[in-house]
Length: 221
Image (cartoon, rainbow, N blue to C red; front, side, top):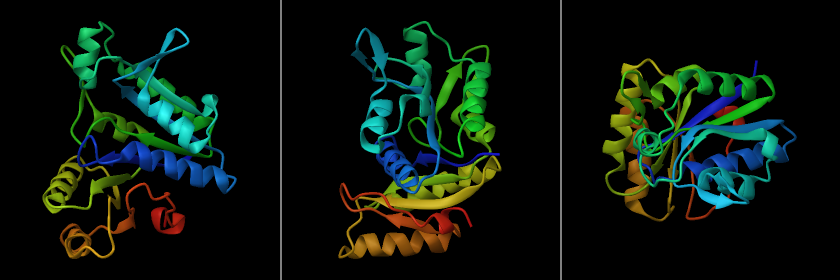
């Protein structure tokens, strides 16, 4: 069975795509047959007559992963949340498609990085059927790596994310603090306080545009 991690975040712009690409690059450089999957992405652009999700494009460019090892089930060009993009573009998200695509990626890779959409709470469909990002988290069976900004307000955001995941019985691997500066007293205290209050480790701290290199033994004990 494939190993993997579900990368989510406390906010849309916390840096989960950058972290996904960086971790994927690290895994590939260590000879691990790793892949990338995302259920739904919006804000796509045209490439050779078809829509390419910006997140998928970023992951491919930064990690060097092959096209066959990177997949987004639903791509929308509207710069809005996935459930609204699906309504505007009249292409509703189907649970069965996500389940089949995810299973295919799990079956064909030694390790899979699954990236969420938006933050922790993200609806994918809200009509006669309700599909939430948390449903995809459960489908993957992976623990969460929660990406958060290192700055002011992150304690609250991290703790709300933890409580949401715990309420749904979704396992958590830990946190990654982005835009972290070793000399910043606030960042130092945020790291310590998040670990103290949540009971989960901060598995990595990244300065601006710093390459991702995580201790895989800590990530997968």
